[in-house]
Amino acid sequence: MDRIVHMEAPPLERKLAAILAADIEGYSRLMNADEEQTLATLTSHRTIIDGLIESAHGEIFGTAGDSVLAEFPSIVHAFNCAIAIQQAMWRANRPLADKHKMYFRIGINVGDVLVKDGDIFGDGVNIAARLEGLADAGGICVTRGVRDHLRDRVDTTFEDLGEHQVKNISRPLRVFRVLFDPQSEPSPSAELTSVQHPERSSSVDQTLPEDQDKDEARRVEVAFWEAVQESDDPAEYLLYLKRYPAGEFAELAAARVAQGGSGVGEPGIEVSFWETVRDTGNAEMIEAYLSKYPTGQFEPRRVCRRPFGLSYAAMAGSSSMA
Image (cartoon, rainbow, N blue to C red; front, top):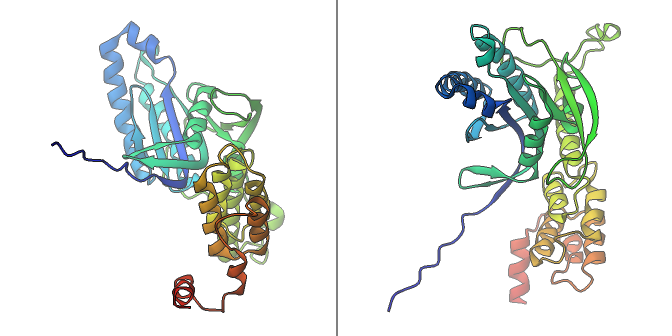
């Protein structure tokens, strides 16, 4: 009798990431006009782009046809890289005849992504791809969360393009076009410094490094919150609570979980919510759990009563011995 082997699905990793999506404007037209020349130009351009992404500490996940999908450890790295790519493409196109010039469109988003089998998925990726489609040839579009993160730290202008309803995204996106000089020297690893204001030029008024670190952390948190705040999926808010248990929006996130959403009926949602409550011991989150799961399978009030310094494992052991 043959044995049936059950293969376990690879685990899904969720993380917050800055995503850059790019594609070639008019790629089908270029291929139809001169296939060999287009492929040669694409190979040359992609060699430049791949090198810039690597220099900016990015990781390439998708390269199907004329598209590029890359993930970066920070919005700053993704933004630097996008600017450098467009500036490098301007230079690479200069010696080409107009009919052979190849222009990329780029979208940048920061949001929650799923990692599986060496690829990334999720709304965070989809939004970056939709932004790319809204960009001009040789241009860059970003979300409001990305703009808010960078607006006081870079000497770059962002043009508000208003809200756009895009395919497969339930809520409208507030889109901003990046205004930059494509003819400047590309520098993907350049440090982005704060825009200097004359009235704050003295050393007394300059921001201290530790204050800059705090400000950077807050910007990342705000960008994360703005990426999930309109979601109907409680798992999005649970991810925020796990990352920022004492965050600025923790109480609101807990309330959103308690209100439920498209995935609230799944048993895993209660378990995830409980794990967040257990790990933080936050009173508002405990009340939110009790409100949503009055007959739930966990006892959150025990979290507040555990002796200081006593681990949950130790409590569980003492309970089983009683």
